[in-house]
Image (cartoon, rainbow, N blue to C red):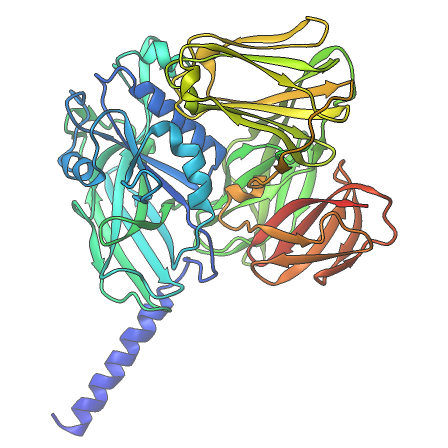
Length: 578
């Protein structure tokens, strides 16, 4: 080869490398935590499978945007909706009964990949806190005339990829399928529509084959890009696909076919930004609720200066969303009034519309409909203690637990789980926290199969505060108790829980010390601190700082909220000033 040919070849190679680098148009290069992939093994003839669906849906609602699901109909109960892919996936997961699940194909304490679907929520908390060497992003376009689907995938390696090889998987799932389901009306009646069961997240196709495409370069800084084209047929297997809007695409990267390193839902390309959904929640020990909306930028240009209309009032959020990305927008915080009274129910809502934004220096009208967010849905009781909590257990009492957390001191006073000896028994527990005050009671059933008996709470005078059917139990986290008398039991431990913003990929945990604090507070974040705000429990900002060391000298003693903004997002943490 002569020198001129070598020179031209080198130039062509450099141009190809530059082209590949420019192709990185939307995947993030910032460190992040993992998102969740639930692969649920199910079937329409499976009596208890609706319980698995219920537990999966609860987890998806708890972590919107960060938790994703694929329902794989396979095995003896999958008389419909099957695929060629299910048997091999179920075999790898070690599925021996239905329903069954895996989460990120991760090996948890049971020593295998498969988990009980009711364990989805606690397992998700663990996965969401795991670091990942891989960021994944994707876009999808579907031509309604030709039904041609084009998926563009980008995978960026923040660190060296683990294992002997990595694989990218592109899964097509179908939602809103109305059809039969054994025991659907018994175990998941809220999922029934006009006598039919609404199936979600059904696996329809793997565009990358059974185990995915090999990623050949997995060293830190590597970028994988690929385009997948697929003509969506009118029917796949025994399911018609009349509505292309019922389809979604999940993209995930695996280590050696197993451990899922990260996952995303492909953003459907469109001309204008829109609100995907809204939600709201509270911290473990708080009456403060922070509703938010997720805004999707489905365009190839960055957008900023989002104009939101909240209950008729317009506000501008100065936040930038990159091409083909999405992020959460926090709305005004709401502090629930839980002052003592006999009994009441609290519920709030707001309607949010994205009216417009700035793109390329020009004002653009947004797309999509307004969303209504319901939040601060709570039952508030006032009673003299000690209180008696009675639980009528089924055959699996170890799946049921309850906690009682102090709102004022952020401490657990009770954190208890049923024991095997409680099977089929009705067991009473005495709740007698040391100090009178406001507490939050939560009751969980990780098995998601409900209880045979009832769950009730009775005060010291014999008055029944509530009595609920255990069959409806999955997660009751809306019970607030004003206990008016001092008791005998001290706290068992500090409350530790994921904050509301932990639902989004951008959010990071905040470390504070000392806590309780006296004159100064030090803030530790996983990425550089941009701004810190100290708020009271109503959400009113009292102090601001741009350094990690905050002077608390002007604050009176009490419970406060620290909100830290970094390049990765916003997180909150409570602290006490003594």
